[in-house]
Amino acid sequence: MQRTALAVALSSLLALPAAHALSLQEAFDAALQNDPTFSGARASLVAAQERTNQSKSLTRPNVGLTASANATRTELKISGTPSASSNDNNQQAGIQATMPLFRPANWAQQEQAKLGEQIADAQLAAARQDLILRLSQAYFDVLAAQDSVSAIAALKKAVGEQLAQAKREFEVGTKTIVDTHEAQARFDQIVAQEAVAQGDLISKQSALSQITGRPTPSLNGLVNKPNLRMVEPASMEDWVSQAERGNYGVVIAGSSLEIAKRDVTRSKAGNLPTVDLVGNVGANRSSGSISLPRSSTGNSATVGVQMTWPLYAGGAIDARLRETIALEDKARLDLEAAKRAANQGAKQAYLGVTYGLAQVRALEAAEVSATSQLNSTRLGYQVGVRINLEVLNAEQQLAQTRTNLLKSRYDTLLAGLRLKSAAGQLGDEDLKAVNAYLSPVPVTPEPVVVPPSPAVKPPPKR
Image (cartoon, rainbow, N blue to C red; front, side, top):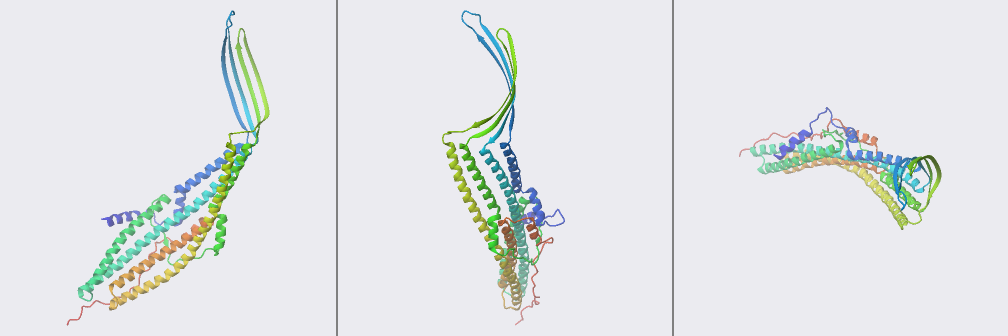
């Protein structure tokens, strides 16, 4: 029942609404529009740009309109005299303007905003690289799961044929029941593995759909015998040097250190005076009466320079300065940590490419050997010098070798992308280069060459 449900779910996910399989480039184009992580980095850049625009106001004039209206009634009573009262009305309106002349803290804050925009821009570029890596990993995970399902299906067919042959030979008396039991046990084991592989494929397709924002159809498969090449330059030291300079983690940490330095400058400015140019233009009208009505109007205009110098703030300014100095030290250490992480990441990715290529070459040779071994073992079984279990093991070994070969090719391609990412050089052209290794037609494993089996004859009568 569970295998049936998995098969139904798998067939529904593999149903193609379009006429072609999904390429890696098409999946990336969809992810650019639908991946929430990348879209969030893009929104952060817009916010940082607006913060830079806000910071420009720190060195520009501030102009404001003020207006007020007041009414006052006063009653005066002196002993022995008649009481007196007055009503006074006052209206004022004016325009005030302030132009910063000397505010070091504002200048430092403006520089911090620009550095923040640079960080957001680097974070967006890093998010694009991360999207390429996450998408490629998810894409190749689906391909690996498809390969596993295909390999198990081919192995199931081969073992099924071996089981049928063992039953026929047992019926005519040329083989024992042991061969049938061995083939049946191996067949049942493969059926269980098939259910697990189908479930894993559905899970991997779901993970890819979360990135692309659309259902995952069948994918382009890796071409037969792809010519995987070493990355350029071939020197690990060159990649490490580039990573320590161009890795986006290093770039972001460097800009963060500069922001921390500007924060120290702002804290030091807390002990300095600030100077502003202040201007005011206003109009005033007042009216009132005690015994006779009276009114007056007037206009005023003032301009001057205003200085403010903080003398003592309860120790807060000095404490803030010590805090920012400590944060600057932390930012400097974070930069060193980012350089070391980029160094290690570049080395690991480089080794992943070099040893991945070596593994691919070794597994390609192992595939040829496993195919020859299977053919020889089948022939030996047919002439009676090999047992059925040896044939089953040879079939299993060939299927596993082919699966491992495909997986090593995927891992090598991914290691090349990670190496470019560690150096801050991963771009769309690198994705296109990997996409060129994928075929628009699903690739199936090469068939196993099986020698023809001799006709089964009953044992001679005694």
